[in-house]
Length: 525
Image (cartoon, rainbow, N blue to C red; front, side, top):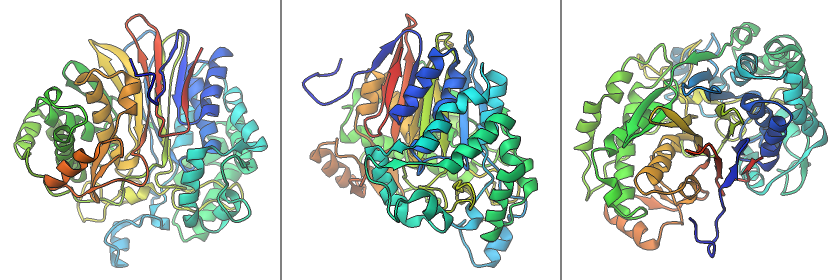
């Protein structure tokens, strides 16, 4: 129970259905969808489509998504990989020949084919209960009529506005400036695209005039992208990977997602008595930081497109964690893990929905960095993601850039299971922070007994290549002690990530938790 004399928020309790996501309008649309007879898939897709209008720096139809789904009446979990592939013409050798040592963060080479729309359409066809015309109707209306810009979104928009180029400036700036809090943002071009998808399914995006707009725009920017690349795009069903932490099973997507990093971190931390430490003291923060460095180093070596990842079993083997754990000195910090092009950033949205039949959806959706590459299609104004920056250029590396490959991906939805029963869909946003965020959220609950809302509210820290980012929620003496241990401590300019969760408790009541670091909320009925 939280202290009601201190700032905070209560969890949302409901019997029939809950949505938790990063924007209130999206949560409301999800609940409206459930009350109109839709199921959790319909509601999650309705919210996700609207989030592209409410939070365009974070996500859009030009991005990727990953989904974990618990069907109604079952406790199995289905994974759907909606991440796109590099165009067939992409070549690491060509980039190296031009003097590049890493995939460009914002260049045309970073633009992979968007996979989210194909995944949305597949999910709706296989698991939804209503047609896409109904599902996308709220997002289409808001795209035409406009959405008032929320406070956190306005801040992120202002931070990212400088990278917008060409047509993107016309579609995502108002009078040449990022919109201020409360200004109305409209996206009539996206409304047209959503109407085509609603009427034609994936063909409304990957074929015809929308695909032609995307490809023509990309080729004008120097890209090798073709209509065939778009036509060939297809999401993939996979089986989740998982691991036990003191009786709770964490389920993650397999590669090309980085979920295995969270599982390795937990395996390392199982070698220590975390629960004996102060929950928000320096010793726990130090152990988690050191486990993260070791797990992220393994991620950088092994995680890639599923067709190229060969060491996953080694990464998740208990003996691997045991050998890594002995490298942790409780009194001295290890060097930071080698960086990839991704860093701590905020440019992701997450939505989770549980319906009256206890179908549960955990969906994460992103264009990677703020507005992706900062480029957009000329006719419809669809932003191009920069997921190709997740590739490396090292010859022979599993994650070496190549045509038709999926890059190593940072966005990872999660689910928890206890005693074989799915108890919680959840997600933590924040780029490379996400595996650490999953671990922090889970250990807050398992080791320290926090309610999911308190586990989300609690202060965070992250061992990034730039040093140990420690939120202001930690007292100054913790910052000082971590510096004594050798960490390059700094207070980040913005909070670390954002999170949403829904607990399906033993009685069947739903409890929604939502991160105050974002604009959103949990709503139920």
